[in-house]
Length: 282
Image 1 (tube, one colour):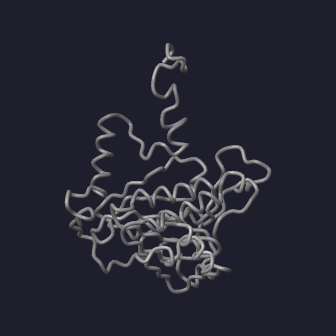
Image 2: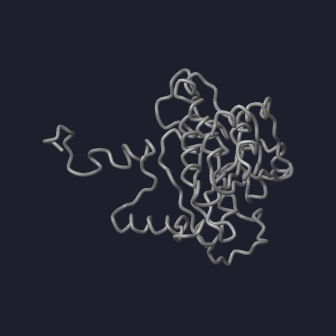
Image 3: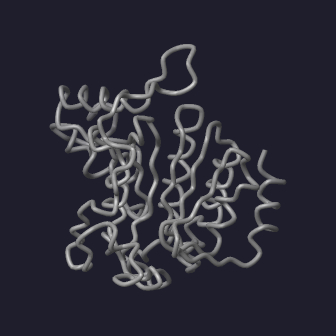
């Protein structure tokens, strides 16, 4: 590397590696400690994504997880959120109006097959922490499971004065929008997509606009339009704003939308916006 004009370093970490470069900028999908660990991650990835030649999707796996298991009894352990069980998140008594923060990963874990370990992609992507992307199984079916962090998150780097000082619950920021679009594209033509949504739309701060929020938000719409396979979109808490446009059934006929009882949704001009995206998409 010295002779090629690059930096001097004794190992991969010295020139960046996962911790300094490829994890924070989203190039690395997974982290592995060493070569055997990398092989293990690869095989775990194949368990969720490998398609036998001539078949449409990855094969359905055998599962001992009962189809009628009550996900509400799954432990939440939110660390100060006040929810002992996942069902408390959906309780009108303990969470009136579905306004209190909660751990979306606990909800995703409750829904996933308990006998198939999940694999999280792009975990270290800096400034994209709101978006959560899992390779998972539901009822034995391999799926790409997406969620949105439903509690405020601290920013891990310098925050400009024209932007938020923390990542707001259920809000898509530029890098998290880019992460969601990439996840949808990665699952297209490979396996079904399941989205557990607690979304209040896109951030509109000057910083987000300056960092291509509109472009990355549009990339989500493009990914939904071009997605090959079934999409299940489930509103689990609240659903507001521009998210209604990019996750609209008008964009893809294979998208099925459902909402849990007690959820809240509101949008202005969602249908016309979806029509514009559909017109400009394909």
